[in-house]
Image 1: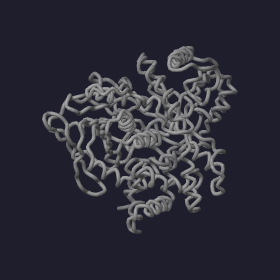
Image 2: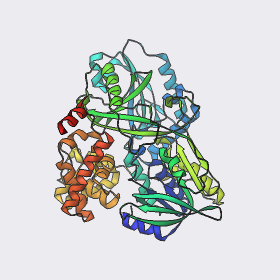
Image 3: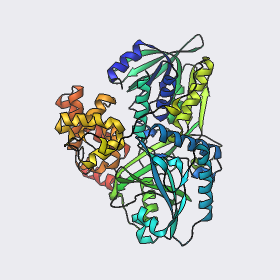
Length: 559
């Protein structure tokens, strides 16, 4: 990607056809689609890319089995088509994930088998499938099958003490959501889009009855500047209404009901799973238990968030709810102290009837166009980012009489590579090579070259994890990483996987700040301040779930 300095300079100097506001999955998708059709495209994000909901999802690229229960068949069908496309265009970061629906009481619920058969049939409309395993790691090319109890135990070792009798096996897709956003942005950058983080829209300027410019604020320079543009696309998720109000004469905007989804992470040794599991939870809900980056991810909740807060904090009560569900199902006794990390995001659900529960609201995308160059796109889900972007750019293309059709369904966002095909660099062992191949695809070669030239960069960021310091250098050079949180929360995911370990070892944040500072020209005082800022952000976001009464005891100790 362009360096941030070059991107900010270009935003102020050029004239754009489309300026996207919001650097999450939807905004990144709009930038990619617009640039691919020849539109002069810019994007600004007030925090960091995927800072909001797009880095705090369940990490699944899936059709959404639970939407079959509500008979939202159109949404499921659309998501299954997009699942296939995501796996095809981003094979380096979207992988097939086996998921088990276990049966513990000697019989399988026939409704589960029926639902999965319908799921298979709808997936078949997107691509042919075969029984058993996914062809070429492609989740839409496999259909569900029945498992024996021993097979369930093999895939879900944590369930062995419950002696499962049988189960169903299906495949969906799994990703690293923040890295997927970066891949999309890098694709847009290659097509000429200009993207900058930490640039906030302050107001939109109209001339002759339509959008003409945006007044933005550069948080790093502490200065305002103007970006000339003919269209503004509001892709800010749960904050869409706030952005709409920054216009002199706001047009229509969808009413948003933010729904908080909290996730927790535990060590794989405490809850060992080789496949995902669909687990019953209180309130007649289900949650996922998923293997993810060497740990086990548990989620999610669905709680009415009320107002759009900034940030959305992981809730200790939500964590207790998730722990109770897995303890009951797996026969465990996990406690808050076993939670290595936690995070929460807010789904931008489009409000329905008064009194409706958030669990009853649809995940369909909604677009609002004021006819004067200001378009809002919200709702939707991680899987359907490309389709949401297509809706927006199709509208602009029709208005501009632009003949170019959408091509993002065949634009490759990266290429996978086998770990053994990476360069033989002694500083990188088997675990690091596998990790880098799965995260960066062929770009892992560039990351490894940094470690080869500076052996200090080949060391782990945090002991016990495969992430290496070369990723920090790569993030600041090529991905506009500007803070320790950018690196630990969104370029790597260590702040989510092991927030407790980072809290116990503050030297890790100081070391990351040191590498950032080497590239950004920070002095020692700035490096210390940036490491401290990460610790403060981790507390604000609730990345570490405290034991009951810990906050009260800490307050008493301060007195």
